[in-house]
Length: 461
Image (tube, rainbow, N blue to C red):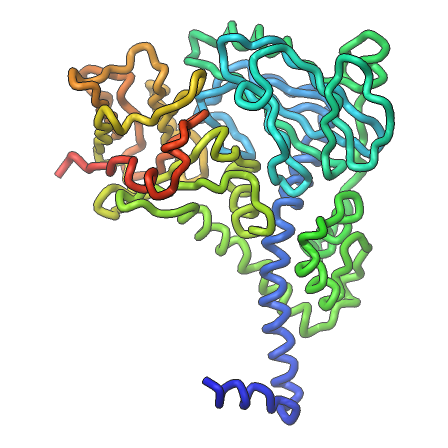
């Protein structure tokens, strides 16, 4: 090993071709880390551009012009196309906030008997402190949401909420127990309001005027990812903790916040960066599949959630799979691509998940859990029965006499206990996601929870 290190130090006599190859390899290695670092901000920008095209809130989608809020008024189906993995546990509402020029006011009604949460994330899709049942309780509330540099007086009746970036994404979730519950949830959605501070002080909660984020730069060259990333970092600069990655960017000629001419990048560095941008998606594909820690029963367990620090790989994976991800204390995620014998889940097969009575996930008051099946593209699986999920609160869910629970997964509807069945498509691979909202402490201990979920048993020959 020491001989190898000494040899590595005697590179001054190597050829120009070897020098160029070494530079390219370094740029590739550094560029892949930069690509992973920047992917969440780029996904945020992609969603922001989608919102910027809207003139009014979209119909039955959590999309709205920037600084306004859009609501889903119905549960998603397999026809719903979304830039995130949908669930059938909550009705979503969503928005992008731009706080550089004006603070915003968010108000919530009293919610004495139903779960809700407002998840806020910075421009890098990392979670900020929550509002909702778990954190702020069940009483009505009103918050003044401001950017990092806002200075002013907080009016009476508002609680200050300061964000570390000027661009913020929010997702409001309200518990829905099934299609029959839709009207009640839609009525509750009307009690959540978003407006400007000026409107609030003027006695109105009418929507904010449309915010224009301008036109994208439209770069199409082979370094477009990196040059766009640099430009986006002008309005939402990296944190102090990101200094090491920023220094790597500077060595490569990628100055955060600057407009970068791609032809100014060293040609050897450029080749490495192009390779990095080509490799990045396959790295994320691997990470999505093996997210979290694999249990002995082939469930993946994710206790990190959406609070990443400098774990840029997990942040990038979360941005691709779920756009932004709950913290485990709010909602714990499990996923499975394989059955208990390690074989890929295939929609032609039938499976059983047997929960002993003491394996059914314990949750706090207003908490609940679900298991949902998805296509490889993270969409709900088409089926005539619209059986996408099994939920703990389903009124028709049948427990066994000893308190245990059997869930059937497969392409054919069972003769009985339809509420215990999740439909699949013959011949198509699928994955299962389990969500546990407001999990009790035993579910948040990795050593405990790795041995908690039962295997997915194939029942057909």
